[in-house]
Length: 478
Image: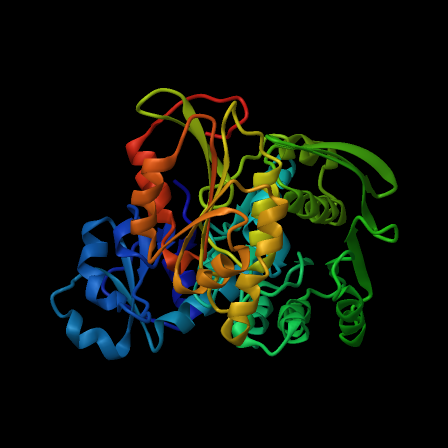
């Protein structure tokens, strides 16, 4: 396997002190001792709950060939004899390595942020660009102060494209990260009421997301959602920053990358999009109107990067919804029949909750089946929490929900707002709700599960996948 970094290049990039006989180089980088692969460099980062230095010996046992450790922690590592690069601050060293990775790379770089759709857009970009060259993209949602430099540090020098997700829940978080990434194309998927508890209003959220434009590479491009109410402000902010290449996507007639027609189907969408003056017929392999908007941004980025559009269109037909973000499972009931489980358990805010409910509405039920919405609290809503939970009543009605299953204290507001119009149950937590659901699911039901990650609705999904046998279904992504 080819080396990702030589040890000498790492020492120079991080201004580190070599200790012991360093290997020629490393084939990967890890910050988790449990997932270290043979030949990796293990960075002993100190996090909120754990200190990587405490797991250095575990990393070595799992195959790490090199440790990056703090000078201050060196005395406590007396029994660890593996080769090390000693630095003042391990996270700062990882950031330095990330900058070095960006400096040596000739890849075309895309960075994505937004209140909703960051990860799905990043994954769509990964697939869309693969036909045009080697793609390096962040795994999972590695979009924060350690995830971004880690993803940069892992970028091979041979990559033709780099795709980065950058997130935030406070101001001034995106700014330092995007200045490491220095994208050629920056996408803001949308501005919505996510992390609203940390901001006074939508304008402050827009300002925080607009930080992604501050790290744009010279001559780079910005892609903005023209259908979003903050488009005009974002475009003005781009002008203030001296950015000349500002583009838009959306259904709006003035959009540079425009949606002309859209047919939503249970297993995906078929759209016509105008890209670079040409009308393209595009099949999107996963369902949901929100993914249509993301696909427009992806097609715009592919066009701006000069990648192969035909291959990108072909790739979009093959995407599938991911775990926690719309993945579908057809599950067999013990007494016969089956039901469809839609896993939206990864996260939730008012916009993504509405999108998930729309997807539930558009999913056909079986004969005698029901639409069951299993909803948990949306976190980080602050003083707005009661209102945004109460306001879900209208989308629930529009989704033609037959049974509403709720958990968490904030969802009491939705329960009150719905009243007796819809059959509703409320339980204190995810585990109690999972037990109840197992007693009420019937043949033909469609069950959609969504909450903020911290509410733990992923446990409901896991309980169902453990309990029920998966069966094939042409309308699902297994």
